[in-house]
Image 1 (cartoon, rainbow, N blue to C red):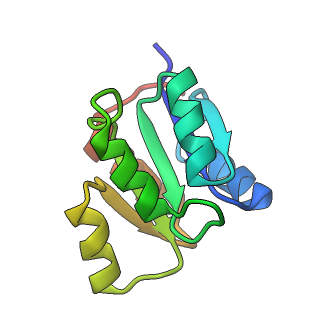
Image 2: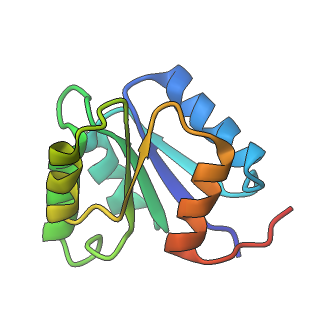
Length: 129
């Protein structure tokens, strides 16, 4: 069974980098769904089953924190693990994400090994490649 990952970032090149990082980590067979902001991510969640969300923090329309808050209000999405990917690394900001339900955090730029560790933590061992 293939896992589905929703990648939420307002930068198309960054979404491509994230997908390449998944491949480098050994998870290239995942189904990738993309959104350019939190509102579009919520629309994607309504139309697609996802096993994990990776979201940027700073985005137009709806930022990553607002996305996390909205997901946790909805019974259909509240158990989906959300990993925040951002250049901001302050403890206060990350504590705020965790307070509202984020499952993990990756600071840009991140290595394939860091991504693999968080996938194993949240989804368990996945033997794709």
